[in-house]
Image 1 (spheres, rainbow, N blue to C red):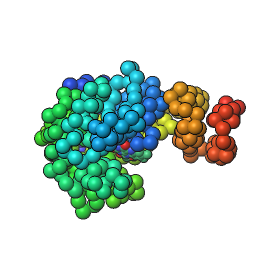
Image 2 (image 1 turned 90 degrees about the vertical axis):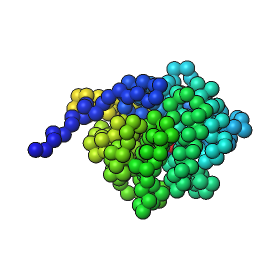
Image 3 (image 1 turned 180 degrees about the vertical axis):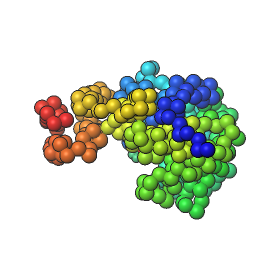
Length: 333
Ligand SMILES: Cc1cc2nc3c(=O)[nH]c(=O)nc-3n(C[C@H](O)[C@H](O)[C@H](O)COP(=O)(O)O)c2cc1C
């Protein structure tokens, strides 16, 4: 007899992450260059279970680099919030984690997924997937240094010949991590091809206590449901799907509960874009705000034929005032 398919709402559940209770199992990922303070302020309106700052380098943190600390800015209502460490030096990783704990973060994560050459060349990011015992050592040193829950975020392996998601899951569990976030692609794949659910499923089968979050290509409720059904993961982690759609958690939650996909209110897009812009203006200087406005404009206005000309006009304008005027006057948002 076939087991009946689980309904979407049956996948929604609270989780316990070490000492932290998460009311639900849908989280937002760290996004370098994107999940900055204004971005997280937007995310926080929709209250995903957990969200993250951009990754920070452990050596920059321990040497008190001012810009690195600024990347960790948050406000008192932004919780539960995670910080992600990037590095491979076991001698300083505990110190870096302690700084994160003292700053008041709820979770500290170790990046084992970043594919960028600049990061992997010293063995950090997804470079760590080639030295699995070092992942265990780094996590153990973090565990010895802090009381807050520890997580680790990985790709499924360096390349298709070296899939290690299940091994890293066990190593992380033994080192005392509370959760592992698994992006279903290898480092070699970068963002090409479709996300592969099978290594995530194998990690779920290999684990005992650690929570497994599936990550990759979750852009709507259908892909969220697919991640749950194909992998049996405890939770899901949304990354690019949050860019220009800070409401995506609420959208997935409602779609799962109501078993229909609620239509997107066109006014929501307009209001959200303008609110995000106001948060950027509060936080960044004028020059930076202009750059960031173009960036978020490309998210909020993407994939829509009716916003093509607005996108192009925005790209041509040079001053923030002109850009804002155009946005407010535009009816096609
Ligand atoms: C612009 C960008 C920045 C990213 N920055 C980080 C990062 O700082 N730390 C990290 O672990 N992953 C980072 N990632 C990877 C994502 O968190 C996520 O694992 C990946 O995009 C797959 O999920 P998605 O298909 O939902 O986007 C980044 C991805 C993108 C596109």
